[in-house]
Length: 285
Length: 327
Image (tube, each protein chain N blue to C red):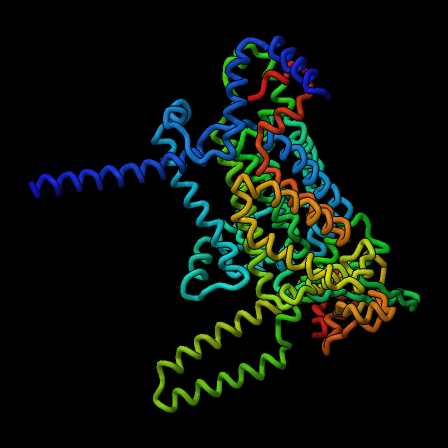
């Protein structure tokens, strides 16, 4: 559009102003500078909010910004002497408003991805194998990504939690240390360590229950979906290939990039485990 | 004489301190409370609403699994949080309803989000939309990613604003009332919401960048390769970049620098267009190559907060009447 035409159009707009439009146009000009201006005449504020209202709002804003910044300052890593206790106090707000995230996207490094594989045995003895996320069967992509995040969650829960035997070993070591401290007249330190040991054990048991609940729910869901009799669930890691491997012709989905952890099977369930009167069969860890 | 000099010095000092404080107070007030138009926020409302609508519509496809809690049992969700207090506040309206009502309420929720998009009863539906986004996120803990975090804060801040003040049914209905024309439609709430989005976005990028600073691959220039060569993320085959690792290093370091410096360079007029321009290929790249178009678009929507409402007001006029009636 030529500048002449543009000018004509602008004139036309001005002519067709409705009553009161002048105020709006001024408002528009004011808005134009609003997002960039840092200072302004106090008189322009007087027309909007009173000093008292602005003061109250300022206090709320400052408090909110403090709550906001404490999220990434305490998640995923927090100082036990500063940010952790503050974040703990603020956790109801963080939870209630779904805040408190760490925002460490693809950090510190883009990591390997993790799959959940399942082997389902049907009533007639036939076996069905699958995995999620499966980009060939799950559509749309957002749904695929939900399944992907679920597999990552299941893996992370397992990877971050030691096996019961490992935990027992560590727990026993701590117990011996406590005994030693108490017998060598360092009773106070020993008692403190014992308190910590008991807390850690309680936390571990809680975590194991949580993981079992998650894997069990996955098993039940898969059995129902595929009308299976038995299901075995395992986790697999797919590593990221080096550029040189790709240059030599490797595909990203080559089996060679799959890694099976030591305890890759995380659960085995039968249909009867989920019957109305369940005989609580614990999944294999 | 010396007494009077001291007194003059004191008074000069007092004045300068007072001036300094007043300047800061004025700057603060201007930054947060100077009334602004709703156009940018209205555009963000429409786009965020469409994204929420899509996201929640997709939940429908696996409703029993993710929202019906078959895959993510309530016991898991409650145990996940460190204390019972936290789990209490990780609320979801589905927890308070019988299962028979879950699907009808879900459909009702989708309708509310449609109202949010078109801007009908915006003041009410925007708060409900924000509550829905948070509620679904709490319900589907374990299947979430960045998209949910971004949508949560966008909807929350949009609810604070008068985002229905432009490009909305509310606006059209209000225009028919003659008295309404007499009032300028600028609101400090728009400014507060815009500033909160801007600051929240700066925090997101800053911590995303700082987190990356801890990783070797972001320094040796291979991180982008790691992202593009992940089979689970890949949607477009970018493995030809294995022969162009120099280019990969440039993109990696540029991404790192951009994220770390965003919080500082997005504010000056001189660098803002550059930062916003880089955001487009970066987020679209994530969307197209890594299959996270929803996340990429959500980040771009959040970046719109740095665009002047007057720009949208000028460029998105739908009719001659609105052309002269920008609030």
